[in-house]
Amino acid sequence: MHFIGIDFGTSNSLASLVSQNRIEFVKFPDGKISNPTILYFPEKSKQHLIGNEAVYRYLSHLEQNEGAGRLMLSIKTLLPEANFDHTAVIGFGRLTADDLAARFIGILKEYAENHFSRAFDGVVLGRPVNFSELALSRLENAAKKAGFKEVIFWLEPVAAALAHEITAEKDELVCVVDLGGGTSDICVVETSPQRSMSADRENDVKAVGGVNQAGDELTSRIMKEQLAPKFGAGSTFFSLGKELPFPVHLIERLSRWHRINLLKNSRDIGDIAAIARSSDRPEDVNRLANLIKHHYGFELFQAINDAKEHLSQNDRAFVKFKPLNLAEEICLTGFEEMISPVTVKIEQAIRETLRAAAVGPAAIKRVILTGGSSQIPQINQMVIKIFGAEKIIRPDFFSSVATGLGYVAARKK
Image (cartoon, rainbow, N blue to C red):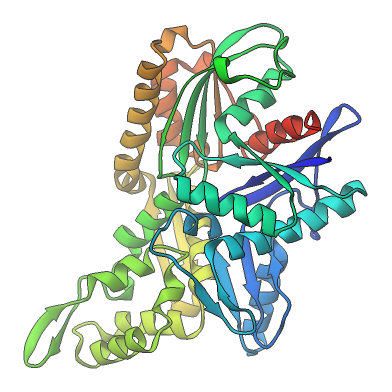
């Protein structure tokens, strides 16, 4: 039986395997080893696409004024949602959460088999620390629907530790702080070059912890607290002779990039049009209507992410999106105020995990700081405050988990 390692992430996904004693990553059609975890079902087509190829095709259809079809983001976030039963996709019928994940994983499996010129019937999948039994069950079902006969789960922060351990020279007590798109995972683990290839490492894991907030939550806060007024938040309108506040549920959906599609229903579209007619800020409400009408949600959140990344090295950034006449400035101090509650929760998770392991920060010899959100200055400084800058090592923040999964997959038979 041949295994492949897959880091099926909230924001991005990778596949990997050790080949000729070195880690090798599966390349997507665009030549990159990492692509966004996105599905696209083109209109009037039985075909579906994933990753950047899905994004390119979707945007191309919009530019050509063709039917946009269905773009689905952050598929992984649907797995733990008990209230999510299915979604209807034209040409594909009713698709459950595991059906959607299976369609992404199935294409990634094909890429892996073409890359390594072999069939894979087993998979080592990363999983967050806080991942419900429902989510695990759905993810396992998805992998089997994609064609894998055996599914093995590996904690994502433990996989990141293994990636470091392969090159370590001595035993060390390590704390992994893995800050991804959907979750922030913490793990205290004893790493050992001698035990790195052992199949059983359960006794080396001293404690795990984390929170279900990370990069996507930070992006959401920029939308909700900074940009939402440009889409009607805080405005008022008249209905049946009464002055009413702009509906909160519309802003909640607007603030989650994978939920904007939920606004594309006749009731919400009708309500927004009615609100605009009696609003004290009709221009802002109409901007929301145009966002929905022209399917601008994905591109707008890309602009927000670009600004967020710019703030990792600069004091100010702009969210620029010309189709909606947006050019909003965000200063670093304002951004840090927005995300401070998330930073506090991550810090609490780190300290609770240390307590669960019965160790203090001084006992930790190395801190593996990884994941895209680890680049944010406030979060980076918080980790330094706990452990000290000299202990922190920063592997490639996109591929460290996938590297560990690839090593695990290579020793499975």
